[in-house]
Length: 614
Ligand code: NDP
Image 1 (spheres, rainbow, N blue to C red):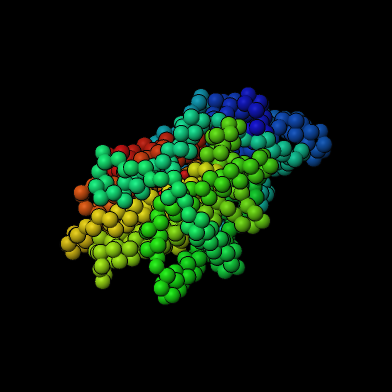
Image 2 (image 1 turned 90 degrees about the vertical axis):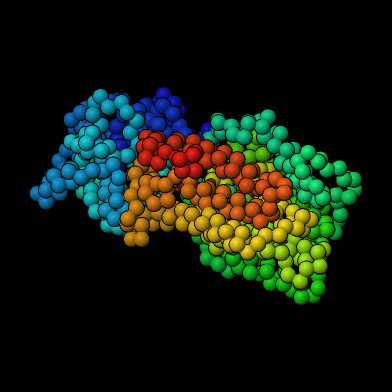
């Protein structure tokens, strides 16, 4: 069932963005991802509005009949949507002071196509009667329609402005509304008479090839992992040299499964330790915010200490290399069992806790993409835990095991240069992810995708066993690289890392605190949701600079393996496909969220990931 209160075609009262005024609008669409209604005003203007900015007509009538503070005739005239009562104009009775008028005159001269971060300005536009363009909060340029721009508020107090912009999909907080109400409106606005009934959202647009695609992926993903691992074990891992299938009984060993379980539950214990700060995630569809403990770095340090202790007591870590396939099978079996558990428990989850992307009503699709958004056992968040802990830290441990296996098998006193590079680059990547753990709370994985087979298998099998393919390859296929080549590859990795980190930090800092003085030189396009879209800096270079940096790093991880086989390049090839697909998904969501503002952003920044190429 869709999680919406108003149906398509319904005539309701919609709040004009940034004002306290409500106008009669017709609902034309609902975006169940962004939880925004597209509504059409009588003059043809279209806007994306939050549910809390929409009221039923009956609640207005109800209130009207109750109220005696203002005359019904005055009230009804104020509701009529005519040019003279445009939402862009201040309500009748509001007097402009002389200084305000002066400010207004001056500010009309300004161009608002780009808003400097240093000067937060809230502007409203008067939609002209023949304006049929979709309006999405983005200011039009003064060249186009200077007189239509009315500045209601300028130089907001920084903290108020920050609060306003940070409120996801919210135009402003109720507290701010109250202030604006006192200043700009002679009348009180209406309050919701009835509590909002939550109607659950259905996933209408199926991704990953829909039911057939997700059904096939459930088999294709494990098959790919086993194919890659079998190939890597061969002396000649050429694509045409198909590996012989191993005996079934050789794939399973109880001890290996026990070690896997031990690792998983050890990570769970580290996650539960009351160390590290607790932060709030983004608001859910019901307005609630979940709390998350940020202690990934501590978990990594404790894991390193545990592995160090094992090595000290001469536990042979290359046991992992010898039983690599069995470990992958154990992880796959565990992730399948976890996915079944997640799906079964999701059947009892309240509708409002289901994932926007995994509530299609089709078993196979919801099982794959994840039906429940944030499955938790008490305060233990299963998805958040699996995203960064057992698999990601496990990847580093596997790489270390490969390094030790290489030394042992080839009787080396020090690991090869190629192995050192692969280990160091990927260690940097994992530590970076853990160091910036909080940033994961705003990713699609946490906010949009449910926890199902896709993420369970991805986090626990794909990441540790496929991402460590280069190190696994190097054990069986030693590669010699010279120091100058190693230096060149290191520079490439550093360039990729620099782009990746600075792009991610720029956006995260901007989302966290748009008024940060460090970001004052950046420009952004405001949107109706209250959030801006950066158009300078990294996000003005291409639309996904972080993906570009990530792909450059992926290439640097493969290059130490030489050019004898394509197998170690699987990661970079797969990763380009993954990020191109992910970018398309994200574009789709952003277009729904930001409408015209997103289109303007795309015009300003035409390339998606690779400048002048794509
Ligand atoms: P991104 O960090 O790329 O975030 C995309 C979001 O950023 C959009 O939905 C939008 O969200 C916001 N945004 C887009 N354009 C702008 C702009 N111009 N200004 C401000 N905000 C903007 O999402 P991902 O979760 O895909 O990636 C996070 C990181 O993880 C990346 O570095 C990626 O490379 C990496 N990654 C790694 C994987 C791996 O397996 N190694 C797999 C997937 C990702 P909103 O406006 O709502 O804030």
